[in-house]
Image 1 (cartoon, rainbow, N blue to C red):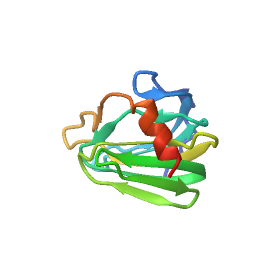
Image 2 (image 1 turned 90 degrees about the horizontal axis):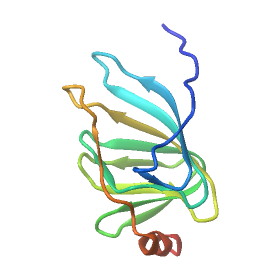
Image 3 (image 1 turned 90 degrees about the vertical axis):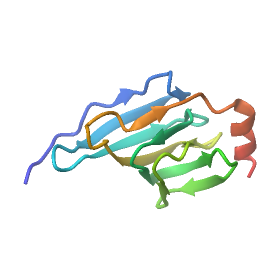
Length: 135
């Protein structure tokens, strides 16, 4: 058993996010585990760019109200207590609603070779984000 101290919260890189988003690392597995867990906090209107994960991603909302969208136009309104499973290689985005904060645990696995499991893409267009908020 090992007790790990809370990691330092960092502001996420602007090239992958719109708005102010903060990440606190919780766990980064070392063989045989490849599990990575982080607490991600989104300010109102903040969101990720389009992205995908080689081995998928699970999100568990801890606070607030947010949105998750996929390329086919599906949008889920998510609330504290909800868990969302994004399958491997599905292009998606997630973030806070326009007028609310949202926090979630982001859980994913590294690729078996240890390389970055996330492929970052372009920002979600503002009009698409705004229409998602009206659902």
